[in-house]
Length: 203
Image (cartoon, rainbow, N blue to C red; front, side, top):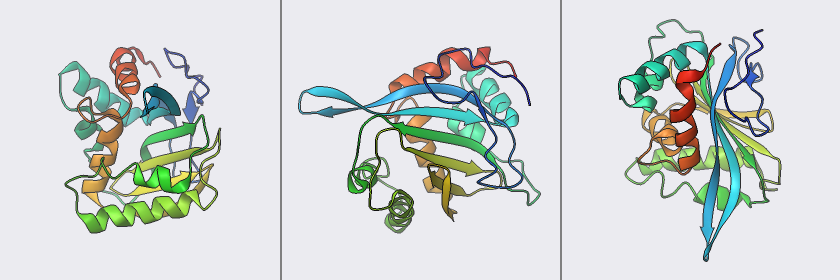
């Protein structure tokens, strides 16, 4: 276990995780960026949740290479050379809520993100997300984490309790872009953090 420390303020996220609750073959993942998701309500910008990016050593190496060559980060880290059947999370995006938000508000907030995607796939994603959150919504300090698995597949967990796995490459790709693609990200702060810090990360 390395004593990895992110070259930026982790803002309450752990520097390193090994998500055994998702798969027994989990590998160490390293915090590679953090930012706030803000929402414009009337005329005020309010903080909704902190969002991070965690990557395995392999994904981090791919990400560094992509950024240094001006290539698309989400495409680079999603690309898979995994021909064996071992499933482990290679990318994770944790969301730590800083205010209470209802289940419906969280789920429906993804409508804009998935414009142009297959509607049945979007509805499946939303139903898995809704089930993961449950009827109580997200309370302050609750976490939702999205995990992208090697060889494909997306897992959603709430406070460490994992939900169903979903296989849909379009949804997996778009969901990642919603956080880390400069043209789509709901958290420009996260994008800035990744671009400023990923090259400095030593593990």
